[in-house]
Image (cartoon, rainbow, N blue to C red; front, side, top):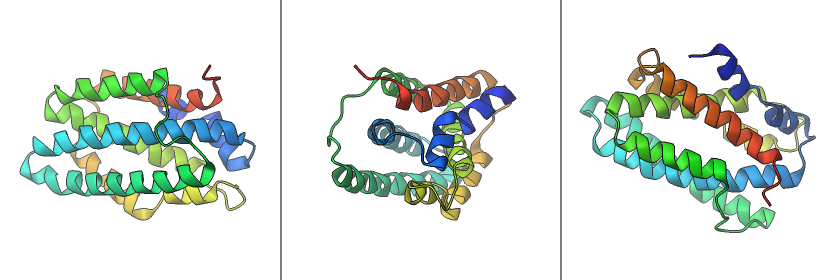
Amino acid sequence: MSDDLWAAATRHPFLDAVRDGTVAASSFDRWLSQDALFVADLLTFQARLLARAPRSAQGVLAGGCAALVAELDWFDGHAADRGLAPEPEPLPTTLAYRELLRRLDSEPFEAAATGLWVIERVYLLGWTSAKSADSPYSEFIDHWTVPEFADYVDGLAVLAQPQRHADLVDEVLRLEVDFWNMAWADPS
């Protein structure tokens, strides 16, 4: 596992621009639209993971599934408020993430749970790095840094085996960096 990759994934220039309020609305909206697609894919993956989880892991995974359903409702409201397409076309990075989640469906539970933990830990640490009361995006930042989400990530940590799945951890971290980068990219 690379400390440099963890830093790149959790302290990205996109997050700095969100914190500082300098990110273009079009870049934020591109990221938000793609993240909604990703969350829908994550819900599918996590529901399947719950179905094959050992009894001791079911509570945290079920709570995560319920939170993802609420997250999709939240995304729908913000997409409508921001005038975003209800079903945007997935960009290449979103498709790459979709493929990773599909691949994790066939991995042993411990590997899949480790991948999920990395995804959620990056999200929590990344948005925590963007915290600022002055950001015009503070409503979004606050939403993704609530204590309940931190507790969920801690619950996933108990299921994760990052040392045993270091290559997978690095793969997820690289995809996270690509996902932040996607916000800056011209989708055409």
